[in-house]
Image (cartoon, rainbow, N blue to C red):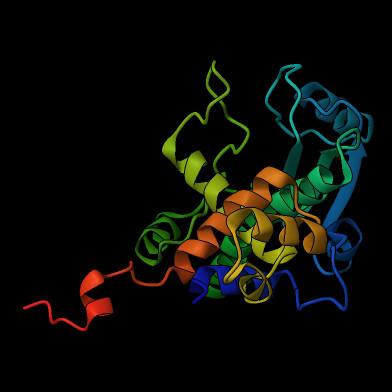
Length: 242
């Protein structure tokens, strides 16, 4: 059974199963969400900053020349999705899906929920044009509606690991949504049932175009969902366990 938050996120992407796989979300998503996809060679925070600055966009981006797969810059209900165009096709496909997932989970859905709770009056707060009133802040607390700046999802520690648990959880959820968008679990499960793990991984990579490591992680997770009870010698012999 798919978690409700995951179903809501897939629905927000306007995503029904396309007629064929692998999917090309880089062309699909801009028609369904206010997201612009920008491929850049040698993607770094500095490269993103330069791209934005040349277009008169002032948005704080983590500094540095460390290369990374993708980056989502989101503000006022719109997003710019950067990804490294030098990577392989499968890697780019998953990166785009992962960054779309961040936009939906960490920006779009929280924003839509705030608008439902507060109405249009809250839009200037969401767009960083004014601070929330004490009453709005209290309501947001009770309704669990985020009004402030979203977590900096690019934050990493000196070792390159996630800087805090909130970032790690956001990354985990983004991976799950990306996997579901590119390879819906309802379609994957029949492919990995009653075959070896390696065969399941090969099938998923071939049909859905996932990178090998991503496909293996996904197949392992789905196989755990499908796991039958462990072999019991008592059941085999027809002996009760009393």
